[in-house]
Image (tube, rainbow, N blue to C red):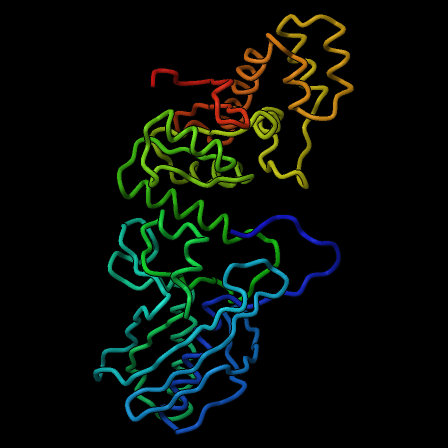
Length: 366
């Protein structure tokens, strides 16, 4: 997943695995038809940009050609930055069009709910369209048939995929070939939002009645134990609670649990839908008001207003800590319900740093 600790200054954009695969396929097909590789190779992206890619690998045989391109993700900390994306092109049956295949390091879809059906290589619709455009350009220029088998591979992709959510989504054997526009915008976190949405899609396709969106690994593991859920029901929401809820508003499930630490969920309780420190801050004055509502004495309330963190307030709250976490959970749930507009049943679970349940709101019958 992409981190959100964005460095200062203007950042350099990069290219998606889909754009690299399309460029490699174009170079390979041209070599198959003409005997020579274009280097660099230029493709046309969906929004009209025409980037040129240097080839890192060329292989021409009688019945196939392969070209490889090193993915440059710009200044985005993408797990596939520096990976070699290879496209191998073979002539296909007359009239068959383009057949896509997963080579080493590219995954295969095994569960319904994703944009590509089970059994197909994990080459998303956007990259398929870009590859088709590249093949069409070569076909027109060199009088090809356009009937080809395109195999995309990424050496080491199976190991890199362990750092993604592909396994949870039911994509086995390697990475997905992604990218709608062909361009990587640094720190846009588009891949994280994409994974949240695809996780919901897979859970819905599996008929799950209950999913959990967690802010981190501790709360996710604790919620998994609390509710006895399988991994397929767990959504790595991170800070993007708004992104998850807005997608659920359009693609609802019967029940969603929001699980997280006290500080993150205090932000949600205050109405923030992006829980990252760069987008929202803990409102200690709001937490102090909650303490007052719970009957805290004036000394504690005044002290809370001067504190620097939610954790500090929780420690100072003492015996009121559990009621305070419950109140944060109730208000976080209210924010979520308002965002969902009534499409899901919602409960909220607040965990401490050790994974112990310290606050809850909503369904409590588990």
